[in-house]
Amino acid sequence: SHWSLGIAPNAIEKDGLLERAASCGLWLFNNTFGANDGVHAGVVMFIVLSGFCIHLPQARDHGKAWERGFWRRYAARRFFRIVPVFVIGAFLGLAMLTLARTWQHDLPAGMLGFADRWTGNGLCLLNAIVPTAPPRGNEALWTVVVEMWLYASYYLIIKIWHCYGWKSVLGYGVLCEAFAIMLRFAGFESWWCASNAFALQLYWIVGALSAKAAIRDHEEGVTPRLHRVIILFIVYVVLCGWIRFGGAHYLKTCFLAVWCGVCLRVFTVREMNGQR
Image 1 (tube, one colour):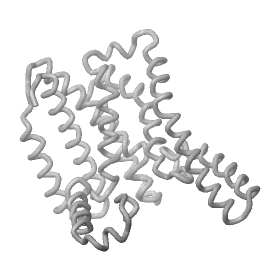
Image 2 (spheres, one colour):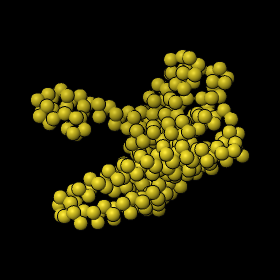
Image 3 (tube, helix red, strand yellow):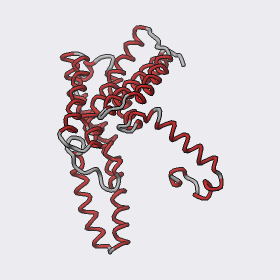
Image 4 (cartoon, one colour):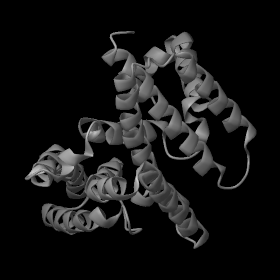
């Protein structure tokens, strides 16, 4: 924790006020945004924001998705946006592991370990749908892996939306969430069941639906009031403290995703309507 604060340990020892402030901030986060007891709140917000931003340009007219060359441009943009991040992050993580192995043993052993782990990181691209090991050396990259799969699912979402409407898209997301919960009952690890592509698909769809709702509000001249965001957040915090049963984190995290979607909808519409 001293390293993450970016200050020397002796500075904290001399100044207990700073340490208490950091503890209070952590307690406040864990009992508000992070009260879902499931996937980290920051990850949930990131996934909802991703679905919102991806769908917003098409929210006015889904017909754009069927224009010539749309999906080719979409694939190219998504590839160059996320794959280089994954490759660089994975390479740096493995490089650090290799240096540590080299210091402990010798250079050949370290380089051999690098090759083995790099091959394993290639297989971890399946981690979003199969319970393989997360990226070695930089396990936080599992979020990037899941995001790749969510990007790929956009074609299916648009197809369902175009043919059957937004309710069917929401139903598809709920089925994905239910499948993730069934995997937990089947005996798979809890952390993977709560954070794989099936579980996070619903949160991504919430973001896309919020983008569509924001465009509709703007076209109809509706300006959502900020009290919606505040009231819904209070309800979320109260429910998180009240609901206590096995697997409740799935429900709490879904509520957090909905709150994030409402925030994006409200603030986006107010920005488009020239209000703060």
